[in-house]
Image 1 (cartoon, rainbow, N blue to C red):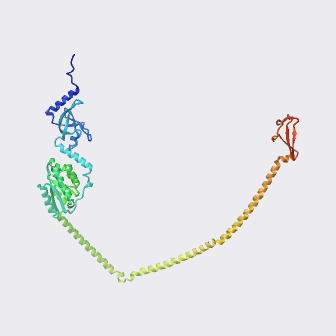
Image 2: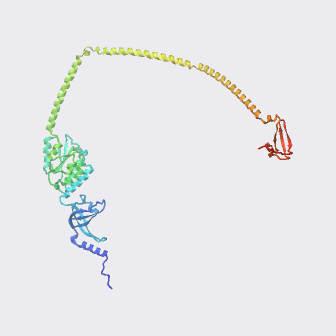
Image 3: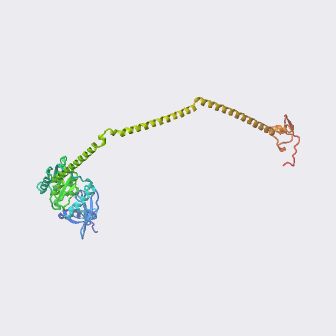
Length: 453
């Protein structure tokens, strides 16, 4: 009989293959390049997708702890560099790539990170025009965040001193290139925030360079720090053709450090010329105003009223006399109306005198009493007549009256009136009722009338 000991279980085989993958030193750290496929972002979870090229595809797993460290958001079809290791998933017997790092392929990484961060911050409103602060016209102190050894601070100081020597320039040195530049820029801006009441405006910038050189000014912590500055911010990063996120979030974007200093400070010579022009306009206006007032004063002094002041009151006195006459007429009319109203009221009071009211009430009562007596007499008379008519009617239909003419009516012993011979029997005793009394009779014989129906 053939032995079955040589057969392995599926679990044993998958376990053996998994050990082979783990023991292979070439599969412990693998670097792959390919295109993301079947990528569906899962919030707060591990990510499962594929990596493919023109000829093949491999399943990829990226655990949550590694995925949260990415500085960009992977998207379907994006070409990326990934590093990790190869392993077997024993329950399904399939091998897959476990990604530990990921970054966009080539220079596209920076552009993709820049695009995604710009889109994110734009949705939050950091670049909105309504958040832009207005630059002060005459700043007393200007804070500058840039390299201490570069030409930027020199250009700003020369331009500011030439245009507006009154403004004080304070440099807060920071690294403007390299891995630690973003943190250095934020630290410098935090120092300015601590003395925010001293500064009217802040300039942040550096000279030109590649995208990698300017990248610290695209870092999210730097952009958010610029947005949170309490004073207006002028950004001058790179050349005129370079645009960073700091330029977008700043209140004013300058193409060069010299332009930044020109935005921050007024031109003293232009301001002085403007002041002289305003001074001349003010003097001319004051002289014209004084001339007008002098002419008006002369007209007043030469007016007839000023020469004869009493004439000023002639018209008013006449008006007072006219008003007085009108007032007296009105008072007379009012008094006359009041007298007429008083007479009318007296007549109404007399008409409503209690004595007259009592007399009219007494007369009315006497009249009503007489009407009541007459009505009662008439009612009694009518009732008597009606009563006599009813008595006569009762007498006319009364059975007693019929009995008085010789008729009688018969009842049995129970007092029931006998209406027919059918209701009596021979030898029955009946009661005969007369007008003046009654008698008892015994029936000797009952004879029916054949003609009766």
